[in-house]
Length: 213
Image (cartoon, rainbow, N blue to C red; front, side, top):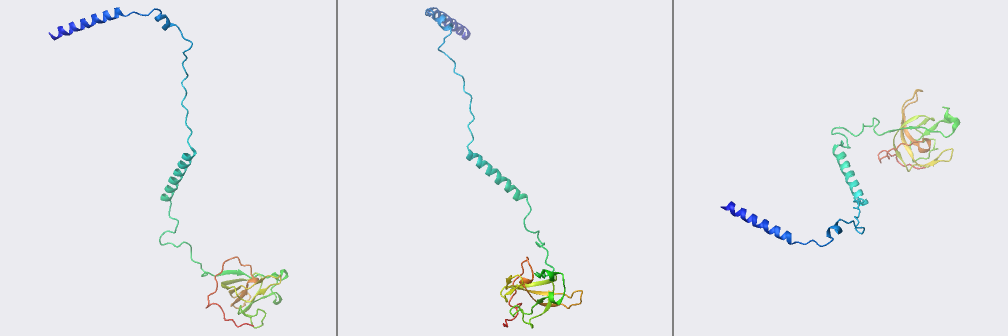
């Protein structure tokens, strides 16, 4: 029953559509106007999408971020800069901080001679007149090696043969040499060496008494 009603309804709709189509009138020349090409209608070209330039600020920020990440990674994986536990940073100085000095005689003729006239005095007291005959602890020659333990910077001013002056005096030791000369201790004027190594300043206990003259 329902199928018959649907069929009747469909037939009625088709009939109405035919009647409406028959009543529609097409204006004269419509199809000709539609088919004819028109010069005033042009299709505009579709513009290509342009890539917007990346601002320099963003590039700089990105570069810094990458650098920080790389540096942070290196810091995490790199070994510690300090020495390993239980190990010292450097071996101990076998001389206990002493420095080896070479005696320097500015008089070239005496640099090859080991005569009394070419010897240089090592004093007993840096605060006593260097030329005083009693202020002598030993003799050295150009090129001799001495062990310096400390230095005073307020000793007697000494001037060498070239006019160079200095109040620096090194507390030195001289071991017995091959010539049989005995070991001695004393003070070498700074102008009698060309030291380039730092030497610690003498403590109060290492300084001799000031007896002047």
